[in-house]
Image (tube, rainbow, N blue to C red; front, top):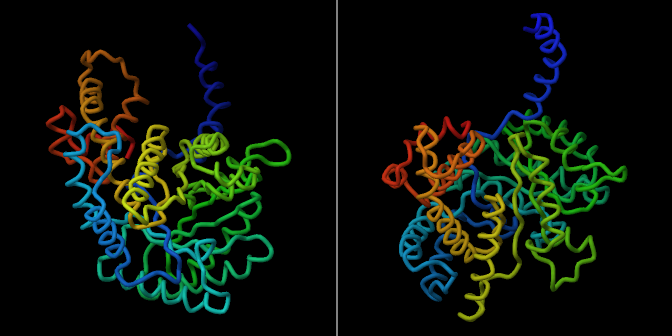
Length: 401
């Protein structure tokens, strides 16, 4: 038998390592993750903007009909009523007022557009019609846009906080250096103190310098840990990142190999930290003729399914009609996963033989899939129970929520 002092010394040496790991990797956030972030230019924000997007999405679905998305007919029959209900009740889960690349107003008009957008989103939240999550993307911290970007945040959060105190999300685009993240944190603290708003931070990954530093280190990981608990996600910027690597415009897409490399590194960088890796967008919009709309919907649905299969449970939507395929593809994914996931979770909890020997980490992932389906409305509690799964509270515990 080993002497007790061997164990004591082992604990002494590794206790600081244990504490540092828990601090750096606290685990997944308990709150629901939105399935998308909808970007609306600051000059295009209208009262009850989320409902307006849902109405437009339903109109597109009624006008063009859902094309063949490669789903089993039974699955389409299950999904379509739920998609319609979602578009009518909670079409947007996360709204980002865009004062960066999507904004088409003049420099002279930006103050007025941002103030108006802040007042509208605050009024929507007070009225209970705003999405669960709301925020703003301002300009980057690069020299030419630094002051403009911070001024925009000051204006937006000042108006938003005065009308509707609570949480807002700030998306910082075109990050190129870890020091930008460190320097931005005191700015966010000052904005919180000035305006009474709790600010969460997202970093938009759209430059190669954000992925790999000049010394060969993974800049992404350093940025994540520099931002700390304020950081909720890394968002992939499809087109800026592809263009910065010289990819021809016709081949810039979220499923290009260069995108996969960046996003996989994003996943590794955020794993266990509480931040999330978020997929980008497609700029092929479902507008025009029925054939054009159907082609865009098929592309969007394929990209959403691909992202979900690779563990990216959130992406960007740029047009109201993209909500149709965002929810159709997402609901189909979670409904298809329900039967096997419910059975395997039950078998794990009961220690019975279900043909697959799942470990605790896999059981957490299975519970996470069921919870994500519940959160977005793809499935409901009764369906999880009828498929053999446990009640919601058990899933929360198993998933670490």
